[in-house]
Length: 190
Length: 190
Image 1 (cartoon, chains in turn yellow, red):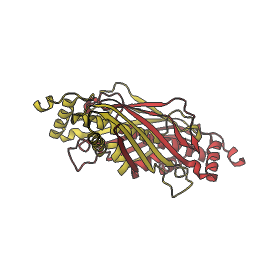
Image 2: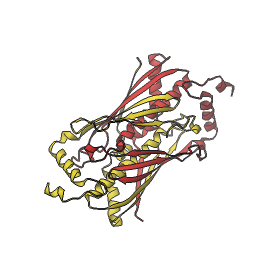
Image 3: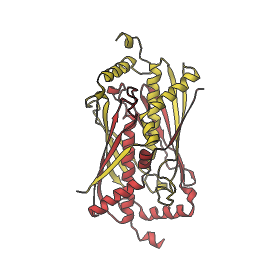
Image 4: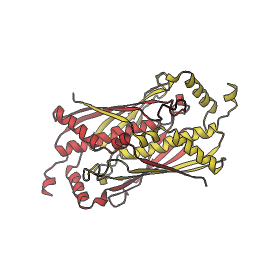
């Protein structure tokens, strides 16, 4: 542990624990198998509610979350909803910004760069002719998502840009949003 | 409007307005151009916070949201975070469940099917050897996401299954998660 103990906590990241976690997974790769979960309940119209709590990872069911996280989604009035939450597609924008930012803080800490500010704005362009079924040539989803970061700290501009780039290269959400994944949908009608 | 006025509100969906919206967009397709947005601010470590409020659509900036929606994301302790919110990848599970459920309610209403219950559970399998940089053969993102619906109402089992299938076919989030999209990331270091 001499090596990791020499790395102090930085950017709010417990760097020794971060490196110890990497070492532990190197020695037992099955610890990296995770399953995340969510449960959604329809409320009314386009309004529905998701709870997120348990997950499996590091070889066991997680018990650290004593309360569930609860999120509403809805369509706005202009899309015949009641605006009780963001639209589902807006949560994709939250997910990509959050994933890149979490990764950036970890990578900066590991590289000894102190951050003082990380902000990002995300825009997603979508032509609803697709989901409305009005033009078969238009896709249902976003045609492009843009994430613009402002990063401040004690690294050079090149080092800061490299942090963002490495976070992008290691981002789970970026991978799914750019490459897609297998999504299976089934239904039971009791 | 005779035709749409004959369709009553159902499942909490204002069906006449839903069809009127479709008619309006048919006559002016540029109304379907939408841009959704999010803004994220790093807090500490892997903890960060997103605000979602304005969007552009139906030919104008939306002003219906008088307050922003605010969501925290973080890593759990086992991933060297502090658990101040779900992980970014869990919000993808929320997004897919919410999108399919919103669509299902609209489609059921349009087809005259009354729903009494819609619940879904979502599971996402991910091997963190990818994002940890420990195995170049392992992708960063989910290898599979499974969405399991329980749907009850006055439709036949075949009709209920067809609602879920049509919602999947018209889902913006399903499209992005399965087919991917263009994601551009840039950084400014003032």
